[in-house]
Length: 108
Image 1 (cartoon, helix red, strand yellow):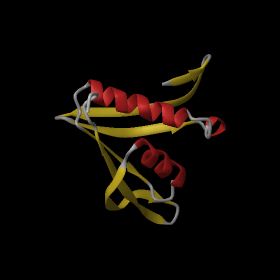
Image 2 (cartoon, rainbow, N blue to C red):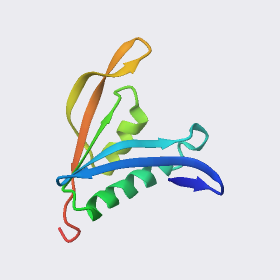
Image 3 (cartoon, rainbow, N blue to C red):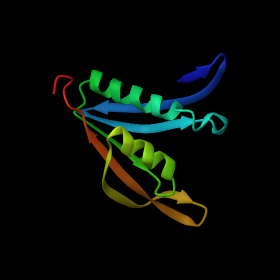
Image 4 (cartoon, rainbow, N blue to C red):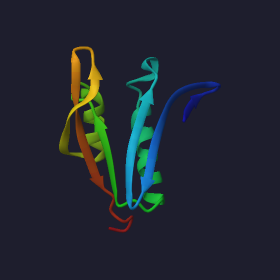
């Protein structure tokens, strides 16, 4: 969770099991977007995944979320596939881009 005093401005959710981590959410309130908060939250989730022994981190993102895709790519994620009709959307359904990154040991 990321807070500014008593106000929550963002949060991230990570699941770790069997050597894999899944970023379930990275959310920043609209008024605080574009200030690096999402990048910091994502990096913290990656650090937590590594601390818990994960070797890979996965996530899904909407193709329409160009800002998030760019952030994930800058962090080292690569597209590895798509899940058709994964998300509900205003005009039916939207695919999910599946992205992953390998976590190298700190001394690699």
